[in-house]
Image 1 (cartoon, rainbow, N blue to C red):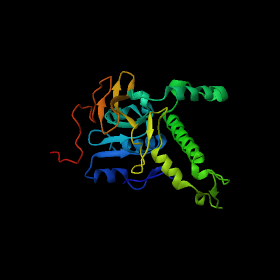
Image 2: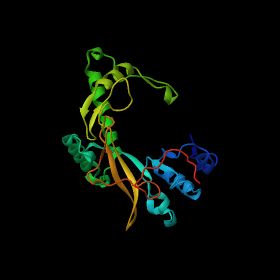
Image 3: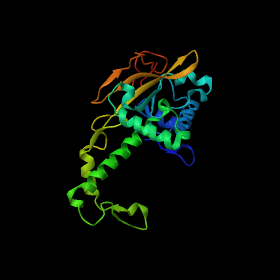
Image 4: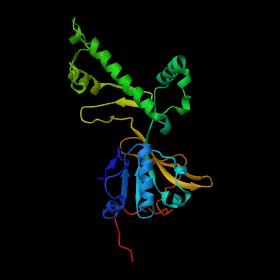
Length: 255
């Protein structure tokens, strides 16, 4: 694992040495957009992006922020991005979504970006909040709470991380069996995983060149149960080196 120091805004150690000495030629970068741009720029300067390495990033970056001399090296980079159900044609709760948008426009219209410009993470956050609300509602209406004590009591502490919700076991049990059709797709959990049991969708995008420069092009979509499928646009994947042949995942000898 290679560590990026967010305080110093740099890799701990020499990135080129780390990658060239590694048997793997696949680099998975899990960072926010700003840090990702910085790390990719470092990698470009060190000549470890391009034909010999396949980079997979998890945050979209501005490709036109890089010098054009690096464009050939950036072609073939992959981006895995979580998306909502509507992007992949899966069911979602349009009634709840429209109601949420109406409330947003009514009370904070100046911050509403338009329904097509709402960030996916805003919809994920809404469903997470809605899940908590529904679970607390069930908890407070259950028989075990038909008493004078509050169902929302906490074990307080001077240290914030020592705050404890007194009925967290009951709440977790309710959360595990809570499921509904949310604004981002189906929402459901279980005791065996921290991820959704269903309703997780992803888009795989590929950096490709066009007349207007470099673009992230959608090539595959994940619709659950380990199943990836080609997008409606049926764009091919361009691998590093502007090749249609998949890159190797390990270092190879070249004569």
